[in-house]
Length: 88
Image 1 (cartoon, rainbow, N blue to C red):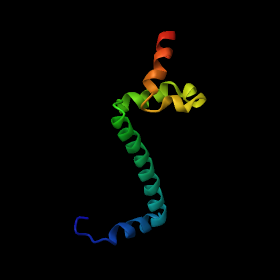
Image 2: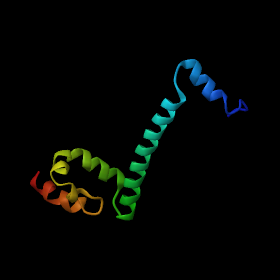
Image 3: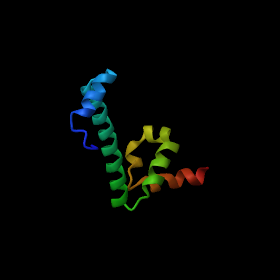
């Protein structure tokens, strides 16, 4: 990192009063969230579904999703949307 050596970031954090373990824990949570979204996106791609549309529809139909999550998988959410779109 800019030739400063590997110990500099930990020194900076200690000067700021932030324990390195707190940063590592936070970064672990961020990595898990990223892994979750990458898994969803890849599953959508394997199912020939548009990942952006899929995640958008999940947000728009959160109450229906909570009632029957099995109907909202990337490979079958379009079939679930059809009756909802004709009713609207």
